[in-house]
Image 1: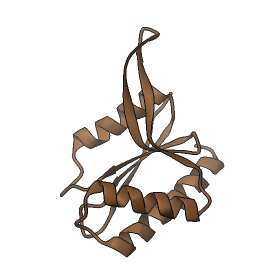
Image 2: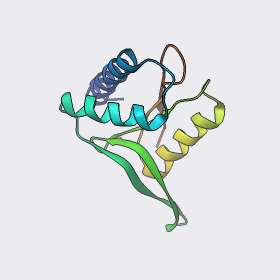
Image 3: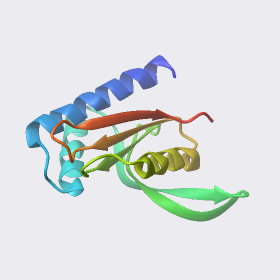
Image 4: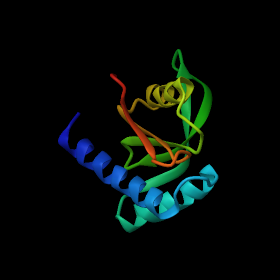
Length: 124
């Protein structure tokens, strides 16, 4: 992974911790999404929320998914507010990375007393 993506994900993780420290656990995912959007804007990080991205099969579009955040056209951030991250949450992010042809994703769970952050890398 290049240094630029490392630096970007470190900045993103800082934004996640700021939201977690400010709100704590127990809110709906949408509350964290709204707060994180404010934090990303304050940090000068460009993003798109609920970005619709196509899913291809044999060079044909067969569906689409909505990434919680597409950040600087290079990182997908998927948010959760659940008791614990499950393998299917990780599989969801990996599938999003495959479909978008991006390498880096962050899976963030605000549903626990200490925020959980999982950085995932997809080999293209």
